[in-house]
Length: 469
Image 1 (cartoon, rainbow, N blue to C red):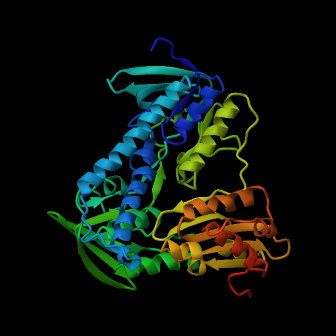
Image 2 (image 1 turned 135 degrees about the vertical axis):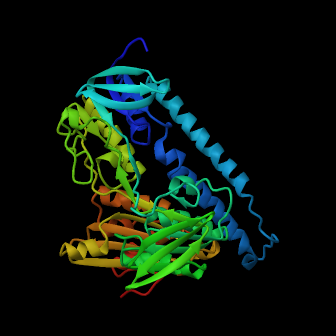
Image 3 (image 1 turned 180 degrees about the vertical axis):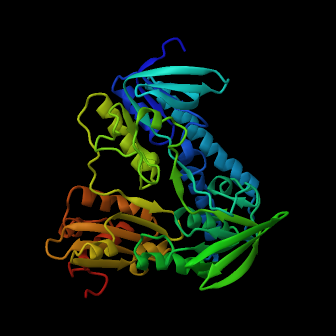
């Protein structure tokens, strides 16, 4: 590369890094992106996108199996997993190539290689060819290296029988039995994909509930669906041992002081992620990390070294692609000299289980722990005409509002299209709305969105299609 000096350098081409690069290009900054493996990062290659493609396919299989309740019969549903994976691959390829085009189209350059800091304003990159090149950034360097799955001592993954999410999205055969270690987002999302395709799943979770951090009444709806479909849930349990013989694994689970051996075809280890902050040379330039290895940042996404920024998973929870993207935009604007800070009031999250879960703002438990008096509004999908028409009546919309002021503090949804419905709630919290603001907004009929309106009305004691307390 002839010119090795840039206005900004982005380390990592995931949903935080590539967005930062595009925004920098839009702001007329000369930018370089360094990616060590593949553009699009975990999200596009083996995280958000491929998993949601498989979830959509599995949901279609499930609907086809039960379509006879609507008077529709297909006969036996057959699944060609190899073809399904090929279909998923076309989506991933289209998106990753699109990311490359967008970065280059905005004037950015891409180098494939492994980066480490040389100084606070320069990096060394070992490229794919083995050559080492030095690149300088005049205005700032953004670290967007993401996170990687946590390994559990004694539960070493082999990529074949004992796998992580990376391998789970690319299986070419449906296992008969799968032990899922970790009842969080990834474990449940991917476990329930294979459950719908015919796998018996056993979820082992150390905490007292699945999806730790989510209100228990919401979680119970998902747990009930998982068990009803033939799954097993072991709470306050831990994987105490693992042996693999050929293509069969035996997981020793300890629960209530008792041990139980479970044989299975696959073990999915999904106990969380850790930040990719090692081997970047951060200590060389004096960048501070927290106890878990995250780069600590201020409201402008700057580390304690002003020329070095951090965004996305490497800068701390929540580990969400859209959080990384938003931070990428902010860091880019700061570097380009614009006024921008991390100032959102709430960050929405979506979990693609069956049924879906989506949350934004404070949970009921968080409000109670903070000593806030709240008013709860709930509307079940079981009385929604639209939910009945699409045969998806499990779950509800839950609104948490300040008891006195009626300010919207949080919303939780478990049920059909929760991931799409939550955006209205996110906007309500972002604009500091009150319960009345949403309750008085006319929602079209018949839609799932009406359930959001009714939940807000219920918080006020004014719900029409459900009894008020």
